[in-house]
Length: 118
Image (cartoon, rainbow, N blue to C red; front, side, top):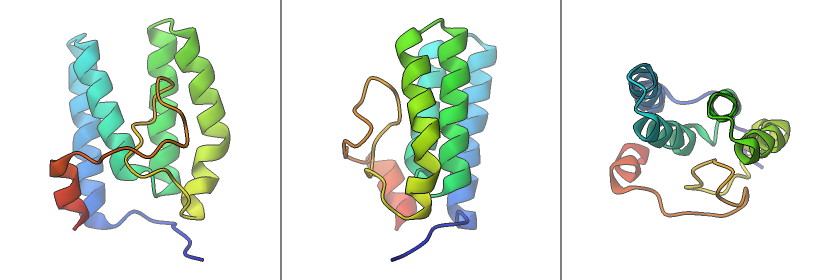
């Protein structure tokens, strides 16, 4: 069994870029773009416990800010289990992490993100 602990440096760079884009869009109150970048951060970081958990933490905060009860409860569930599933390398690849998607559903990875995984 493979254990994931630390995100590789080349992925961390892309993960952080998505978080910066999220924060910029949020500051501009462009909420759909902000969410888009949160989902991308989730896809990139979901195999690594710290990044995976942090993406869900930001999604929880976003849900609270938007007063989206479904998102808040969905993120609480994901925060409870997401990190340890990353640690044991048992994540649904490509899943965008929002409460609008089943937590165990595998999804296609966007082509530009596929490239950085190579």
